[in-house]
Image 1 (spheres, rainbow, N blue to C red):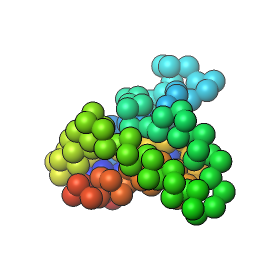
Image 2 (spheres, rainbow, N blue to C red):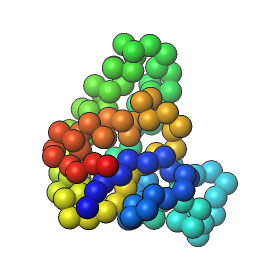
Image 3 (cartoon, rainbow, N blue to C red):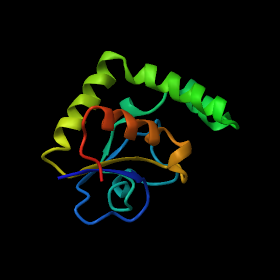
Amino acid sequence: MTLHIVRLGTPRLKHEGTRIGTVRRPPRGVAKDRFAADNWYDVWYPDLSPSAELVTLALAAATPKEWNAFERAFRAEMNEPGPRRTLDLLAALSQESNFSIGCYCEDESRCHRSVLRKLLAERGAKIA
């Protein structure tokens, strides 16, 4: 059983399981009833997305120093009780279930999902 970190809107992987959208907003121009059918996500879970302020910071990050500032701030948000418990739950579920989390960004290294990958790995998640 495994947790996959994916780009939303891409074809699903074999045995990927439930796809969780960790994004602030649903995909634009896509009808709600098409979210799962078009490989966006099965469940929308914005609680694991950066705040609007941090999304702006991430999009503006042009240097490694600026990206590191985003990562530190996002880690602080994810250390709040609710997100922290969710990350603990997902890490535990990854030992027994197939599922995925994702975002729309093309480049994972410049996306909050790269930070989520690290946070989940730190909790012992079984990541593909």
